[in-house]
Image (cartoon, rainbow, N blue to C red):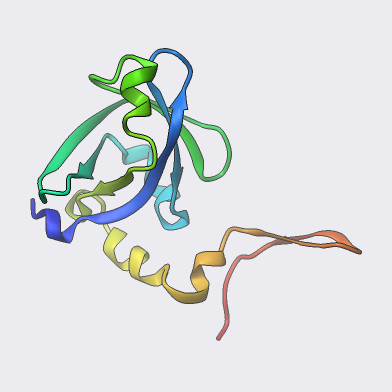
Length: 130
């Protein structure tokens, strides 16, 4: 496990509820790996990493999940983690490194819904042709 090779997959948005749940936003490339998602890391300024073990996860929307994690059991503890990036070890997820590299450039828009002021919702972006 080399923290320098970790991949950023999301961000803790805010505390959710009173029991320490975390509302998190995830990168589009990681959503397919949510079934395997059991541990994530946060990086400290010193360069060390702290693991957090996921007890439960529930989708709120396509890329927003509420996580319950071990040892975060109050709203105050969850609030201390607000706006912190979420990292994973790519060795635990097959193909994740390639997917994260694909995400660069225009591909970040894959999965978003396009809407027009006149016509309303047009549809989701499925692929990018350059």
